[in-house]
Length: 97
Image (cartoon, rainbow, N blue to C red; front, top):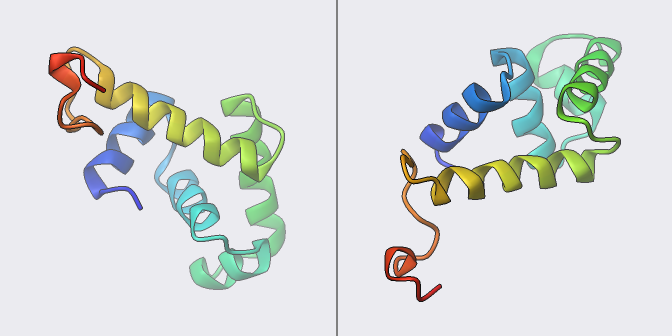
């Protein structure tokens, strides 16, 4: 759903580690904790711990809120005056969005 550049920028702004980013991307892929564990060859408990840390770090309480927080940050990154990411709306700069 998001470009590699978008993921990198989001991770940088939110201070998300490489492994945490992999977990977040897997949540976006709608994978269960067991499926995430299998994908990265780690235990489901480790996945659960990563998710708990992410929830605290991003001040969210569920996977849905996590996804919404990431999308919110992506939108902010496209609206910023110094945006690295392209605008979501091609007419953003003219104020027609």
